[in-house]
Every structure is written in structure tokens, then in C-alpha cells.
Length: 545
Figure 1 (cartoon, rainbow, N blue to C red):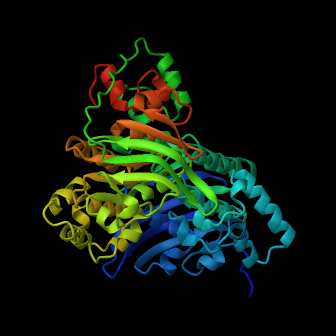
Figure 2 (figure 1 turned 180 degrees about the vertical axis):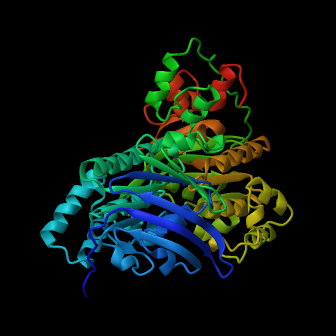
Figure 3 (figure 1 turned 30 degrees about the vertical axis):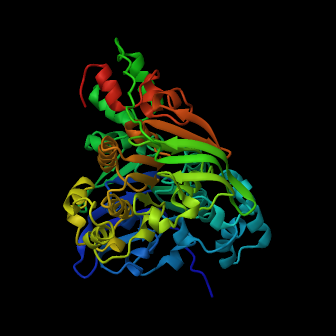
């Protein structure tokens, strides 16, 4: 079977592109005109549900060939009109990394996953082996070479998915939220690798991203989709000047609030602006934690393993009512395993896990779930009803007597307009909020959230932070496994960092995050001391957000 050879024409062209899903064809993209030259590094941003994933899938022919819906206009990629050429023809020049790395996984072992695509194209064995070695080193995952994919953390799987796309050496690399599950080191490694390929080899990089602070200093252009189908395109600084402040990364938010010119995109530019200031903000007061009472969760000497690999070693922790615990650490450090151990899904090798005084090893996870809300890392797997409202109603029926009001939850998580939509038709960020709503409507006294801001835009992330703080005031204990330091700074009463299976730090956010090289916020990198959030800095200047 022959493979179509890409024409010599390079670059990407969108001409009047219009697209809507379903028989109604309600517009997700509307009259998109967009040109991308070869060798550009382009970041696509926008609120959850604005059409970012749909736009990216136009680049490899998944839209319109496998999406259904109504497509208008034209997309030409390296000379291929995507209406005439589908994903197979485009695969030799367009590499694609999906938002959910499991959706494109085909092999059981990491090294086989990297080689699979090359095998399908008949690439010589020596070339394959060389590319696998180079890519493993490029993304810092050589130690994962022989691991089974099933044993990897979500972030590790995400890096393997990026690596598998890179081994094909595409001319255009398209990535849908490639850092959403990555720890700060992993995200820096991936972005640095993409920047190196872009600069050294002229690879065209097009990626969507909510955490603009990770990539905005690298991008040549920023393309922001507005809910309803329109877009803004231009230089990163020029586009950020036009956006609602809720979509801005923290350094740009503070720059706009303090009227810095030019608007800073990076910590380096922000520090240059600070040097020109005549006064600095007053250091914030320490947040007082009033939580107390009998522990909701007690871990005593917890040791957990997957096969022969020990993940957690002798973990001792107590979590009390009203505490918001941020669980942080590298990908694969054991955060998800710890949450699963509390739910009774992961049986410890030794040690004790008590939830409200009950040893979970002797209790059924279904019984634990009556008072413990658990949001897994893959929220789509939790959704099975026909509408968002039905999903929440199902959860409420199974927690009679203390379920929260359905409309209250829909409003709190900004799901009102989606209440009659099928959850499987939603974006990843919308699915995340729907799954979270289904957990929260049960009104649990203990919340376990595994990467809850994955695929969530800045505005809705702040709404989630407010909702978590409301639950804290009600005495709910919350444990959040996350790499999102900005969310941690807004909500956490304690930060617990796990390294090599052990607790390496445990304390208030200002103690644990301040001065950290990696686990800290943009405001702390800019102003130091105890500053963590934009609000901290504004209050220090006597201003209000």
C-alpha cells in the first residue's frame, strides 16, 4: 500500500472555515481565516468549549472526515486540501498529540509505543532505533523505556505520547494541551524540547494551552478562540492586550493592573519592570488556618506498590475537617496512588488507612464513596448518562437526604448552558467540570480531587477555587493532587510534597512554596518574600483586584 507524498508547498491556510457538530450544525468555528507559515511556533488559547480541539483536528483531517457535523470553507496543510485528503495522507507531514494520551496509545511497552508509527511507515530498523534513542533523551524519559504503559502516571503517559509523535519527524507538530498533566519539570522539558526542534530544525509547532505562563514567552504568535466561533490572532503581547484579564497569565495580569508598559510576558520582563518602580508592595499577612477536630483521614506507615515497584514508603499523614491539602510532586511520585489508597481502590502492602476512623482495607469502596467524593484523573470514564443534568441527578439519587441542589451546582461550575448536552459531546474541560459537579452534588464530607483543573481555563479555575473555599468553610476536608501552583496558592491550607515515595515537605503554602525554584507561583518569582497570588501583590500596593 503506497503512502501519498506531501507536495512541496509548505504552511497552513484556513479560508472561511465554519464547523458545527451534530445535525443542528451549531457553530463551534465560524469564518476562521488563518495563515501559519512554515517554522512558526503558534499557541492556541481560549475558554473551555471555545473550539480549540476542533480547530486543531482540522489540521490532520479528523475534522471533517471522522467528526461528522457540517464543515465549510477549506483547510490546506502543506499543499493538501483536507477535504480531499484524510488523516492517513496527512500523517507523513502532521504529527498529532491528543489531549488524552490514552486515546492514541497502541502498545503495551513504552519503547514499542515510540516505534509503532515508524513500523507502519516501513522505516528502516536502524533509523527507528536511532530515533527512539534520540527522542527518549530529548524528553527525559529514558528511564521509562521498558515500563508497561499501564503502570505509568498520567503525566508520564502524556510525555510518551509527545515522544511517539516526534519519532515520525513530522514537518508540523500539533499538540492539544500537552502539558496539562505534567509536573513543572516535565512541562519545562516538553516546552524546551519543542522550542529546540522549532529553532534548530524549523519544525512548525501548533499547540493549545490554558496555562499560558508556560509557553507565552516561546510563542511567535497567539491565536485565541472566542466562544461562539470567532478568534483573535497576532503577536502574543498584542493579543494579550485585547483579552479579558481572566484569561491572562499572572505576570500579565499584574502588569496590566500596575500599568506596566510594555506588558510583560515572562518573569524576566516582569523583573525589569519592577526595577523601574519607586516603591514595592507590603508583604502579605500569613493566612491563619482554623481547621481542627478529629482527623477525617489518617495514614500510618502507608506503603503501596505496583508489582515489584514501590510507589509509597511509610507515609504518615493526618487530614482534619476544613483542611485543603495540596498534594504535589513529580509525575509518578505517588499522588494518585495515595488518593486511590484512601478510597480503598489500592490495597496497601502494609500500614493503615483510616477514613473517619474506619480502616478502608476492611470496607467496600462503594461504602466509602457514600461520604467521600473522588474525582479521578480521567473524568470522561465517570460519565455515562445522556445529559449533564441526568448525570448530576443520578448522583443525587444515590445520596438521598444530603445531596446539594442541582441548579446550585450547575451555576457554581458554570454548567447551566450545558445542562441538556450529552457529556460525551463536551470538551475535555467541560467534561472535567461535569464530573466534578457529579461528585460535589453528593455533598461529601471528604473530597479527593485528582488534577481537577486539567483542561480548565483561568476564569473557571478561579470559580472552582471559590467553590473549594466554600466547602472548606463548611468543614469539608479536601485533598487535591495537582501541579497547578496557582490553584494551590489560592486554596490550600497545607502543601504536602511527595518525592521518591516519601513526604519531603509538609506545611502552609507560604512556607513550602515561597522561594522554591519550581513549586512556586509567578508572583513569588517576581516579588519574592511571602507573595503568592496577584491579590497578595495588589493588596500590598493598597489596591484591590
